[in-house]
Length: 291
Image (cartoon, rainbow, N blue to C red; front, top):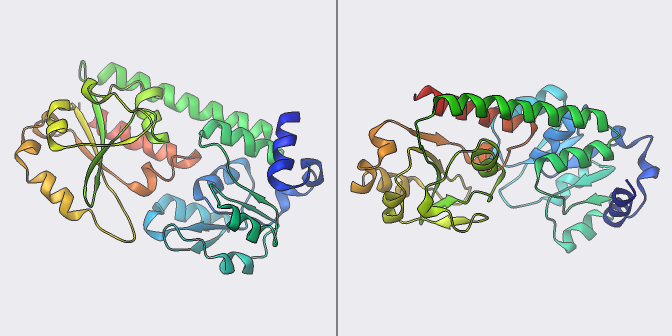
């Protein structure tokens, strides 16, 4: 707890005791929808949250609307500070803000940024911040149970010696997600125990370039395809090129109807308290539905 207090004071500029009675009642602006989900799950309603419309899953839009959180739509990779200022927040929570952006926001309200990407650690952090430690522990238990149940179902029904590959289709080519490269990859390969093709197991922490030749060599049993969503370009041509290639037609996953299409906004941006459940439902439907 002392370490948390020191870190909090270093980031925010004042000790957490000053927030103790009122922090959960503050007008908090979240610059990350995934963080806002955690607050809502803890019983704390954010005053506002910034989103990129093209990357906001439907469940998340409904969630924010239902609890009364103001949605601030912004272009991808752009923080429109004037819109945030109009909300008059008491606390701003971001992800990786530049020092310049932090200094500008700190003239309005205390700023928290540079937080961990690990979901359970984030839940614990916000549990302490909002004095919802018991709720945080309960959320982690529920998520852990959900994972264990799905893992057991998969192990009983998945094709023997099956391999799973998450392939990202981009404007200029293809990438595969390393086993520790994102929350969704950690869910697939570490928590659920699914196996990546051996030939692609290097560079676990990266989104790695993948040629059609490498894809053929990997020849996964199950293939999750993400056509990357960006505000500034489209991956339509790359996807069409892949699907019309000779290599594609020869993949086991294609031959056996084990190709599943996933959404950037959910799988990459929002593997959070509610989003992770959505992803697990899709994994359940994809893998077990294809048995």
